[in-house]
Length: 120
Image (tube, rainbow, N blue to C red; front, side, top):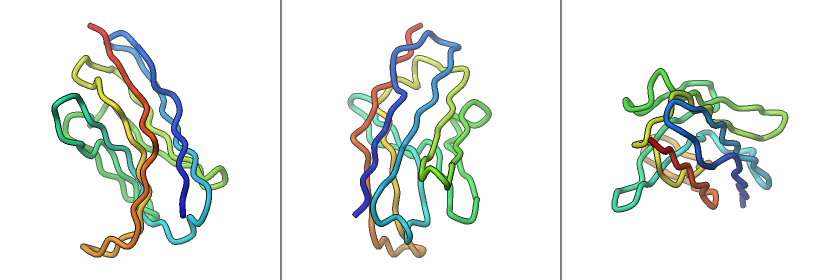
């Protein structure tokens, strides 16, 4: 089992910045993918940014150039630096850790979610 604790959400004005953190504990030795998802009211949960154990990164087109995902292996923590925030970034953000091999999802863990609200 893996436990994920998120922090760093809040209210910010458009153009501002926030940094989300996701601290992991438990059996993380087999985890090979980490990421951040978000879900706005009335919308499906969507991938915002992902990072593989080998270092590969991927971003949603809507956040490219504004958001940066990173990790600190020593602290078992993944971060999402969000700059130039827009009102449409408002959502609950979820941290995700998983183990997968192509289409085979072995394990999948979610954080509790943290609210990000961007005012115009």
